Image (cartoon, rainbow, N blue to C red; front, side, top):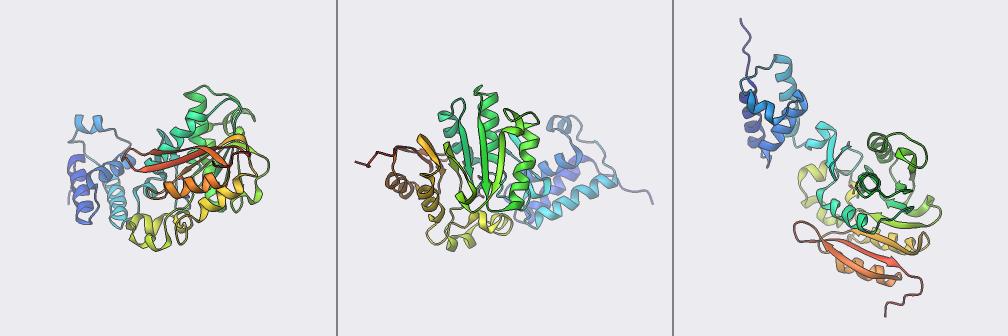
Length: 302
Ligand code: GLN
């Protein structure tokens, strides 16, 4: 019997239908990304030639990915990639998938970035914050002499961050490329030495009892330790803010991503620890998202 060959348009439409039937919200977008992943085809090429015939191997490869997505495996775990600040980051199940909200933290950090700064990224995960800060700082703002340290309690996460640093910062000596970033494992500041001019962090901040209310993709596939901010969600903000004062330079900046209802609590923590010029910035959805301040040993909060 002659094998039936389907064209790309029919296959895409079937992919969308299978995902929609499985309750995937953005079925058309996800079905498209998976097609792009399997075929390496652009949208322009697709529209130019919707009758393009796929061979059985390509079709099978596509539907096997569609079946995974229908089981609520996140798209990024299937493709191994998430774009952040316009850069392609490698991801796997050991790291939080970088969120668009977090780009706001990087944008605020870019505003205070200056030549020769030492940057610390606490709970670095995939390394998305630190690596894009270094890359955008150098390439877009022409800032030189930046040096970054990323820490995380998970060694598996650090493997992902190191891979991303090589991938996105490239080679080069200690003054450039991946040579100007290092990663260290530890419980927050446990293995951090010296002081930093800029400390950034998107720590775990979901209240434990709220984790079960999250989307299945997040609840079942992002690492629990990357989400869990303990009982009131503020556990890591408290610890990082208190311990930061031994690792920040005079006039250095501490910048956090926060949950939408946590900004005022985090402002209070910063003030109590001796930070001044404290500010809150909103994300694109208009929700409080970034809290920051600069350290001043003599500031009394009055
Ligand atoms: N810093 C990483 C990110 O923003 C990981 C954060 C986390 O694991 N809570 O994506």
